[in-house]
Length: 174
Image (cartoon, rainbow, N blue to C red; front, side, top):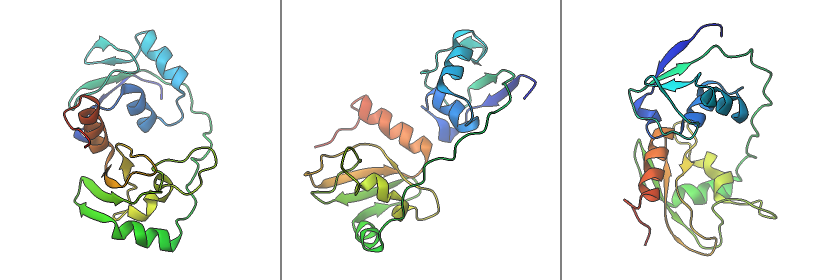
């Protein structure tokens, strides 16, 4: 890219951090390069200097400076295929689903995310809940041994808004 661009933040990108917005639009950009562009004032939001962690609002204008040629990016690590029995169990655990969220009844003993020695976890099985092709996103976690309702977002914008609601304690887990 050899010229300055102005891009408008969409509704689905509301409350997304600037660095994550950049990585979505320019996947070859490194975190260090994004931070340097912000630190030197080359990236601006609505004409103001910003930090990489700045949260974006719909309709804001992001100034994107000329970027260096993209280096080849290693392909994203794909999740292994979901066992058909696990996929059926997961779909049966869906309590509610609409265009924005999936509400899931998480069973005890199933970790939400992986870790050392944990190969079977909910995050690795989310492809089974990609009803329209889009993989849902985790918004919060429950402990491995805890059963209960787990909220999943179906788009990045919804995930950002729900995460913000949990972070600001506008929503709480009981």
